Amino acid sequence: MNPLPRLTLLLAAAAFLASNGPLQASGFQLREQSPSAQGNAFAGVSARGFDIGSMYFNPATLTAFDGFQVVTGLSFVAPVAELSGATATRATLGGPLAPFGGTTIAGAASHGDAANNAILPNLYAMWSVSKDFKLGLSVNAPFGLVTDYDADFIGRYHALKSDLKTVDVAVNAAYRVHPKFSVGASLVYRTVEAELSNAVDMGQIAFLGLASSTNPVYPSSIWLPFSPTAASFDGKATIQGDTHVLGYKAGLTFQPTEAFTLGLSYHGATKPKVEGTVTYRYPTDVPVASQPYFNAVVNGAHLVDGGATAEVELPDTLSLGLAWDVTPTLALALEASRTGWSSFKELRVAFDSGQADSVTHENWRDTWYCALGATWKLSEALSLRAGVATDQGAVKEVYRTPRIPDGDRTWFSTGLGYRLSDRLTFDVAYTHILVKDGKLALQAGTPGNPDFFRGDLTGTYRNRINILAASLRMSF
Image 1 (cartoon, rainbow, N blue to C red):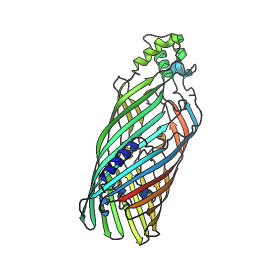
Image 2: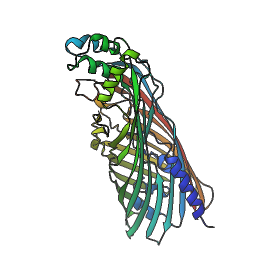
Image 3: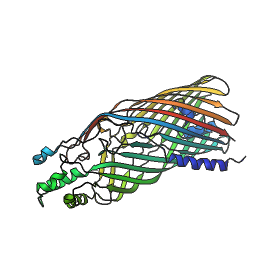
């Protein structure tokens, strides 16, 4: 039986699905890469896996497997992100324009689920070149987010749609340099697609541009129709782009005894430069007599279609795993991972048109993921798994935005593995994630603040996530 044609089809299918379904995890990193390991809340996966899917976390773990193997899996992720108690106001103004500042931004105080369900695929294949040398191929979606708000969302000037998709295709190699010690490395080809949109308070922009003009000085009859106390004139900006970048991973495993394995791995950071376009949709209800003045301000601010560029920070991760066979039927595992989100200082978009950069201050913090898991071998065919984990949110409260309403998480996972035959094993896992309530406390500030035209925004996010995953292991 030649498995290569079937593997080619699986690779194509996995790449397609990975490009069409990622969503937000802690920060926007996706841990859902192995249904078998998910049953243990990914505890110990950097030291030893139940299948070759552990190569994503630590390529050195491949030396624990033999022959030619394929694992294909899907994770259905159902997140909920609900905003309540929201308020929004425009920036305060000084001088003679003070009466026109601080006006309320229209919109409901609550918003239903802004997160999208997604299917995350993963695919792995391994060849045993020799007893000690293994090669692997993997397809994954390591980062991603999707949040999508209604057009009249109270925080629409901060965010409407945020969509980040990544696909990793990696070549992995592992070598057993000593009966107790293995090393591994991966070369990763990463593609990135991004779409960001938000409403633009073009009425406020036109109002301030005309009312504060000194050359010429416009009469109030020109700029009053644009004042926030009179009406709102919303436009929309949409930024889309894509790119690709190379990355790497490295790892090692150490097995001092038959029952005890340690693993250490490092996933290098990447900084892809996303290049694409910005397109604007303008309000259609501007009074005819005011249209020329509105156009002059919009064009003067360079709010026109054109090219756009942004650098996306995708951080590094350092992981330590431990796996311990306590008895022939009971195994315990630990995992600790540190992700360098502190490198994500800001999201800056530069425009070819001459428009001022769009800047969102992020100032994230490094995060820890710590997990404890257990596996019970009930028979030669059936194993049960369980695990718990704490997953620190990357977002500091003062910088939380509607694009990524992240928060601290607690994982509760369970799963099982069942060997259908000598060549087929089925794994399934379920996880429920509790997310700490997240406060919004964005301030418009002064005209130099990036949020000046976005306005103040407060509220509380209540989030939760359910994950159902399954995979099939095939040996040839």
